[in-house]
Length: 250
Image (cartoon, rainbow, N blue to C red):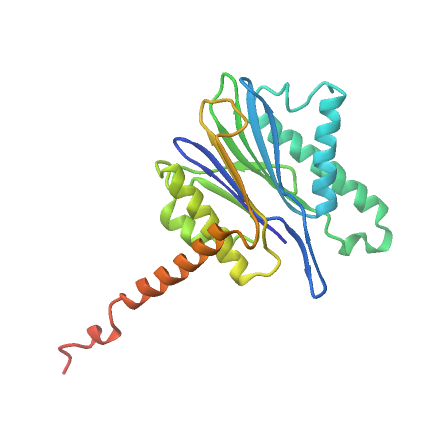
């Protein structure tokens, strides 16, 4: 399991992802789920991956192979980010079909599906953000909820719903993304560090304006976690008392 999210802001795009791929009793494995492709001054694209690791690795490998071989269509000659989303869906479906054909009797019980978030900007066009489903189709973020999530989404969604709007400042959005992932890690051991977070500024056409990677023992991550725990407990204690409902009753 994994958890990745992307936020579409007036100022640009925020991407955040965990890196855990396995959390068994005797082994914890990690693998970066954030993949960056850029031609400074022309385009900046970020892909987040979730689901079957073999499928997502094969898709990223094919993207890189198409770039190296200057394929007729590749992410460096695409006109729109939506075209890249279609391309991702096609590659993902092709990989899933390979496993289905090779799986034999166990194919029906083997889940080779993967989900992707693709976001960025291509010169001459506005920034775009899409989630690509295992079936190959895709959706974009809405103005009311300008973010997309893949993987283990339920634990980190409430804070996004309450905080994130298109005009949310970048600093706030990045902290919110980290708290969203940390809240997920608290409830699900299959999501874990290192955490990667990136901000692309709208119109810059540069790879990123800000990027950082936080290991489990990073002082900032520990401070953020403790501050969130302390403040949420404090806010809970300030909630109206239940006895207030019964004051004045006979």
